[in-house]
Amino acid sequence: MKNESGWVAPSTPEHVLGLVEEAMKDDEQLIMLHPDWCKSCALCVDVCPKDCLEMDGPLPRLTDAKLCTSCGMCEYLCPDFAIHVLKLRWQKG
Image (cartoon, rainbow, N blue to C red):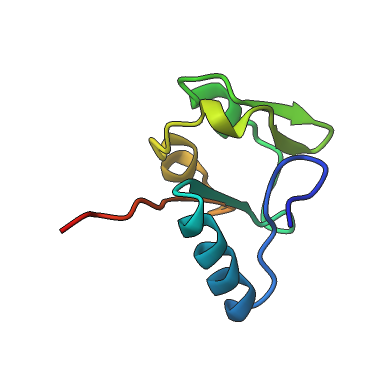
């Protein structure tokens, strides 16, 4: 599911829905990178408060998904809209 850089690269809407369902079972976040949209600016790496991103050649690499707090700073500041962070938590009624 994840590539060697630790990212999930979505391909179709159905693929994204499957990824969300799988992540919700494990009560975790889903971090997606669109590699074709990324221009290698490294803003995501610079703003990550937990230092869980680093550049690996032209693309950012997720070093440890467990460190990610799903704050969304990488997504918010990405000028190319290449990163999406979904925090998936079940709410108990």
